[in-house]
Length: 294
Image 1 (cartoon, rainbow, N blue to C red):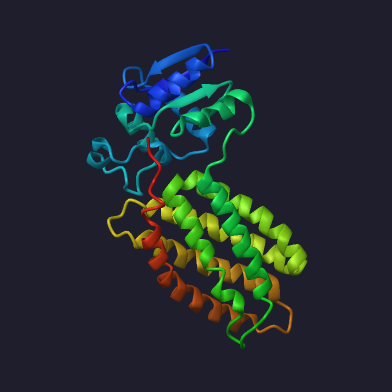
Image 2 (image 1 turned 180 degrees about the horizontal axis):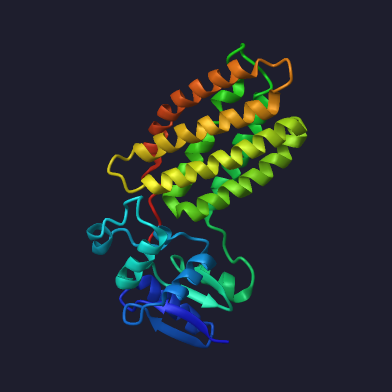
């Protein structure tokens, strides 16, 4: 079966990916998508196959993106897709497809994953995010069992770092990859928390973590094009922290002698302060977490 590559001959990464595929001896169907854009159904299949939303696959520095105000959070999925079809220069490249599987060749060698059926290389950013997330959540689930007073536990000072990890991952590799980090970190952290804490703490932490972090990814992604660099991480972390605190303390401690209401209020107050404080490392690391583009 032929491999399809959505190719832009003016793009160096697209040319490198094409050369790699030719060197591997694959039969290729080369689609110069600027001349022959995909259909709406085809673009939807590509997005679904990549696990991306339309903005994840857009080149936001292209003129049509600004001219059509495509960073407007009010734009529907259909409106964004229509813009991509009308202005195919907006579509990231190259995209490689085989047997219903898709890969984006920002790193040309990454397309080999779908061709040979195994992962050739895991994104360093994603791997670092998963490791950091696992350590932070597992440590926080242990520390939350040690109150400082009726208003605070030690876990209040470590857990907010998880939002920094999520936001930096989102900025660097996009919402789809950030969700992967959240899900992988969730699974590993719950397993470790059952061992290091208690099953009830692990369940409460896991549910609160998953809901809050996915909310953080969603809000950050919708605000990422704002001129004020501090707005996406601050707003997303603040709202997601409220959800996280409410879910965790109610599930973990309701019906016990633990003063979970005051602990929850104290925890959220610390999270708001740390959300502001985390803007310092976020700003310092923005250069290293630049969005990966072709």
